[in-house]
Amino acid sequence: MKKLFTLAAALLLMGSASAQLYNLVKVTEVKDNGLYVFERNGHVLDTVLVNNALQTTDKYQKVALTGQEHYVYRLIGSAEDGFAIRNEQKYAKHPQGHNFMNNPSNKTNITFANSSSAAWKFDFDGDEALIYNANNADRFLGETEEGSNAYKAYAASNIDTYGHNFTVYELQVSTSPYITTSPAAADFGSKAVGSDAVTMDITVNYGNLKGSVTYSGLKDPFSAKGTIAKSGDKLTITANPSKEGTYSQTLTIESATDNVKVQVTVKMNVTDPTAGYAKMTGKMVEGDYVLTYGEYAMKASIMLNSKNEKVNRFENGTFTLSGDMLTNPDESIIWHIASAGDSWTLYNKSVNKYAGSTDAKNQGALLDDATTDNAKWNITVTEENTYEFENVARAASAQNPENKWLHNNTTYGFACYGSNTGGALTLYKIGGTATALDQAETTVKARKVIEDGRVIIIRDGVRYNAQGIRLQ
Image: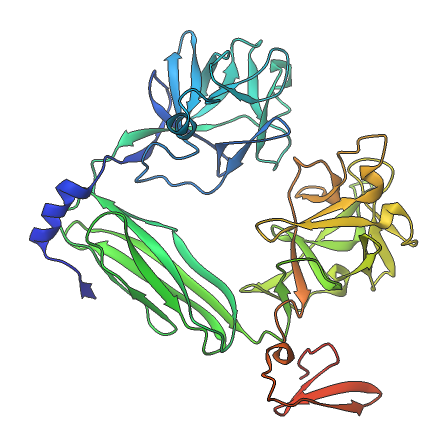
């Protein structure tokens, strides 16, 4: 363990460097001018609007908040008359801007405006609250559908239809010793064996400490470096993918004097990049893929209901990950994606059919004909390297054209849903990372031979098929 600075130095720094920070404390009543975070199903209300629905995030912290995080709101008003809900980050950046959460008369829409026309009230039942707008016939914040993690304002008569039970946290000044890190974990994902070392910074925040801060716990292939002289300093973690294996270690950052610590899980999966299905990034190219959303993969079979009737949605399949590599997928979840003019088709060999749409919303179908627009998809990559599949026929339909996205409803499987259901897909592609042949230096020679009627490529004594995938 490294001793980073003396107790005397630490005490001097604490008074000058530590700003006022807050912890989240669960409450069962709210008050004027209080700062709050509203949580449901592990997600908190954010400020992003998609199709007039308020989105949420599961990336939030419960200690050492500054009060200006994008998910922190201030209540202005009273329990009797209702509150204006103001987003503090928006207000700090643009005091005259669209900072207040509103709900137009007789509509489900959520909007942000430069003043509040809403009177939001909080009806607590135990430690959970119903949040409703007394200025709009008591319309309440409800989840658009189960699992969407998006919210609109629904009529009180729909109280049993839309999820609405929020946990309310108040930001209260922290008085107890604490240490926090951002991010809370360091996951380097999958790296090719022998590739360059990579680094990640971990920001360490602390307050109300009497003792010094130390860190320990990492060994090869990980190392940590840095000093923590004040709250907000950074440690740099280095990961060296020199040997194959799955690695998980714990970096402990603590003040032994104050008996407080935080543990950061550090992970890396070092793999042979020529084997398995790798997480896809960048533009779409033809190949074999597994299409996933959360814990589910799209399966080439249509779901049945309790009456053994088809419900026109693709079943949720299962898959296994080793780091960022998907291993041993069943043939039913492997889709060959190929170009079809400006669009793409999805073909599954195990059933000899294409994934497509029907003429109705919220449905999917296994098709024989790949030439129809129902079997064609426009594919775009997001900044997060996930992929949106837009069905060509559904986009041109006169009925519910917005229900054109190949998304997943965790209850009902994959189909052509609206944008508020599920989200873009994560893809795993055979040979999705560079193969050993791709990485070969120009001075290294590879030779081709024919074995049992197929092309075999041999480089450095290792045998590959024609696609550059290593053979056992």
